[in-house]
Length: 204
Image (cartoon, rainbow, N blue to C red; front, top):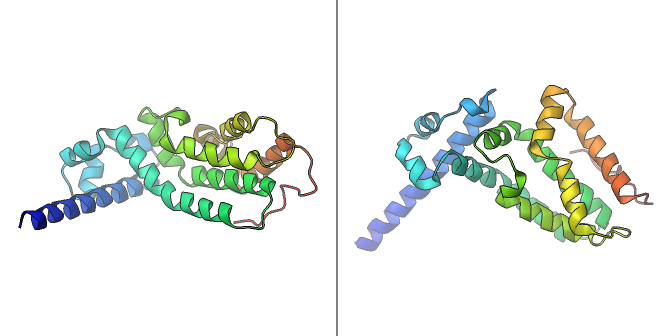
């Protein structure tokens, strides 16, 4: 009986967590002013008490970090599967990795802005940064002519910081397609000339 009750509690907790993440995700995506989305708003949309949010996530920054992680999980899985597939050159894998990260940041600008407002402005504090850096470093290590893959991975990721992406898209009115093309050209410049040009890719 006790085990059944424990399983029920765990199932309810999991449902509450998923409801909170989905509600927060929807509210941040729909808001033109992400910093105005409050814990009260999220709790009401999820149908839980505000205390549940603080017990589960600690604070607003913890909740936003969890939402970002949940959004990144399917992307990271797709990236891992693509990296394992044969056929693409190391240079193309570098471009595909950075393009995937850039598209995520473009599509989730409001969420990323909310993270900055909550005190997560440094990308190096985010748990997913180390994941992106390591998988990019491994790809760069296989590109001829790259002498310091670790530093180059950091430098390339800095070129697509979330705050820079938001500034270019929202303030300077750059188009997502134009920004992706500029990124491809920049990577090509960083890695040098190649018979396998980085600009040749399928538009997603």
